[in-house]
Amino acid sequence: MSLRIQEPRAPKISDAAPVGGLVSVAVPAPASEIRRFLQKRGSSGMADSTFRWVMLICALSIFAIVGLIATELVMSSKLTLVKFGWKFFVGSSWDPVNNDFGALPFIYGTLVSSLVALALAVPLAIGVAVFLTEMCPKALRGILSFLTELLAAIPSVVYGLWAIFVLVPLLRGYVNPVLIKLLGWTGLFVPPDFGIGMFAAGVILAIMILPIISSLTREVMTAVPHAQREAVLALGATRWEMIRMGVLRNARIGIVGSVILGLGRALGETMAVAMVIGSSPTISKSLLAPASTMASVIANEFAEASDDTYRSALIEIGLALFLVTIVVNIFARLLVWAVTRGTPARAA
Image (tube, rainbow, N blue to C red):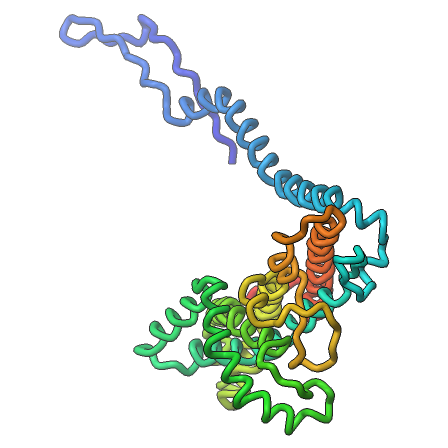
């Protein structure tokens, strides 16, 4: 439907009508709101163009930030990149005295501690989210939700102090002996047991990423339409089948996304892990043995790195952490594609 604006015409004498011997002239109506809008629209072109360029600069700044970080890491670690090459990432020796460096023990510690954290945190976080969404009484739901989100606001160093004084003695005195007795045959839990080590780091990481995964999973489950639940129950399904097929299946993409965010937090965590992992540049199959992660070794040793090669090696470990993060995100994209079968999610 087209809108045609009629130009107001000037009054004519012929339009005048005598009223009581006087001549009345028809006064043209003021310009309509549409006309004034069209008149102003021509002057707003500069504002639209400026806004578009500002938004484009904001988007391109993300590429600039990532590029600057990568450039600085490469330039600052150029000394060890030239000296060791790609062998730095597969070497297992870490000897600052003889300037012999390899980042494999720290890459191994980072990946293993993060996987242990996910193995412990994901089932618990999903269980908390299911309880809060589907089973929790309304009077208790607000309190539990607040406490769960409060865990995400606790500083990392507080987690580390709590782990040193509470978690480590608890693991050393009660949990680890049971794991050694039951699962020692796997080689994952063998003496000596110092309390600190890879398993302690994995447990504290699991506690730290639990509120992230739980909160996001709860939000995704809440977004599932209530009609989905009623439809599954109407078909004769049990409550567990309703949660499994009507809720979790529809929320699986969001759950995978929450797990990815939790993994990102676990990979980059520094202080809490540095305080309980033991700071040992070794590779051990046992989860009870001391180890180090890429973030923890940078935090522990960067201040005492007086040699240029030593400092360059630590910065290159930061580059390795940067590359590991990229690889994990690529893997996460592939995982999301596998979950969705390469098709976009359909609106409920």
